Image 1 (cartoon, rainbow, N blue to C red):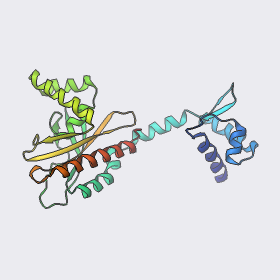
Image 2: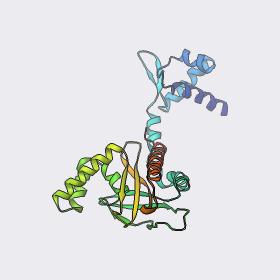
Image 3: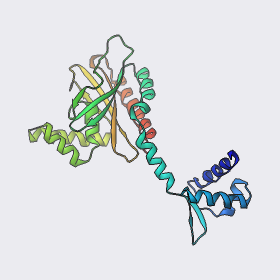
Image 4: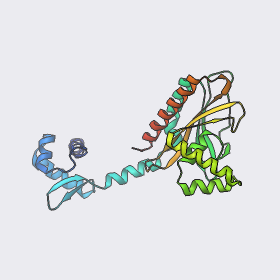
Length: 244
């Protein structure tokens, strides 16, 4: 039984080659060093489970749709907090500041995780805290990556004056272009925050990672480091959540 699984996976690994997606049974036999009769038998079994599919005209095999279904189910069940936690812990050590993970929830975001700065003086916002979506780096970077209809609807609900809405829209366009956001004292006076978006496997904004520090203690070089590290971490978590 185990040998059959190993042999089937050898075929799947060959079919997974990005340079060549369609294979004749004889080609699979040559690439896996398996007897052609074994390859035929395994292909029939894999096809019955939709793990491979056969083009009846060319007699070539390729990966089946079942892999897509399995992949989507896997990513739908991923918990962004569980995936992000070890990555955020490493980030907090590298930048020596408090790190946050926020998720959007209608017109607010919710802090779902926090890794405290190792410094004796640090900024602490509570897990579970709800923050209006137009305030702060984390919220703005998520708002900037929502659809235009969604972001404008949120701004209309939160901001009454049209001139303020237009200024925020301008900010959001620039944030989306850059791929990160910086805020200074928007939520807590005397602080600076740098944030980047996290996306799911369909490219939808899922969360934001941010670093928050006391502004008077942050040099230009440190701020540049925050930007570099936050963007790097956000991309890593997005990759773990299935974004390519």
